[in-house]
Image (cartoon, rainbow, N blue to C red):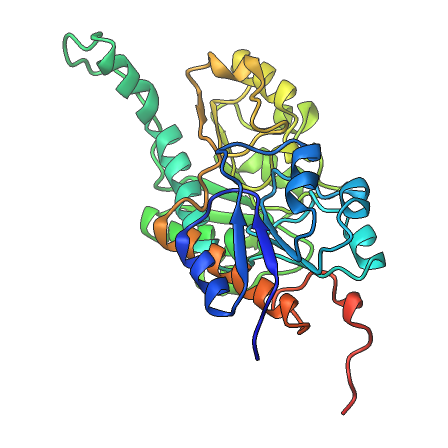
Length: 331
């Protein structure tokens, strides 16, 4: 069945996504600017378009939806969709899709990259060398922490949290986790224990966050939680920026209440709390959790495939608001 229609890409993405749509007879228009479009710009660019491929940085609110009556579907190239007013889209009959599953391994790898960078003070010692300060080796130079025998605390044991935990096998870490339900994979494979968040914060040497953003998880880690952590502990966040109170984290790092933090996401991204930028015990990355060629291509193609289904009037494979399709058939 032929596709038809025109879709807009809010940013340039791997080319295979565009080819996927064009093979289905769907034309593509791409934002020519390598930046996030302002809300009025996005509305103008989507005028008369049938579909939209967008990112978490794009605001898809009630105002945007009201000003974009021609849209028949919106595909996010992301797992999260907290930037979308899903209820408003559902009320207008617009399906919304995401790209779950494909970024699990890439994000888990990056979480471990941050953990290792913090444990062995890698970015800090590299900056030291590049500044010409390495004059002589010394037995007290950039002492870090061992992993063997330490405890890894996983907050949110879903796909990514599980993948992070399973990667600990080669490092000799004990694993504890907190989640709304038991993770039998971590328990069977690693002997992991499910504990409460306060116990995890008090016990773990390395704490890694893997929860979705919701009213319940916003500032899940704040001043009180940071005070519960060991002074030698490190915090890693590759989930959502607002899960951590950045101001409280900056204070805790400045006061050495915890040893370090590794962040790939930020509360008011792309702005980073200025208190973090000057700290040697903070490893800060520009949201590169899924930034591998293979993963980003898979995400882009998945988003495009969702749009193809939407443009054909079919159910999008990764629809997050299935109510737009009505009750499922009993046939």
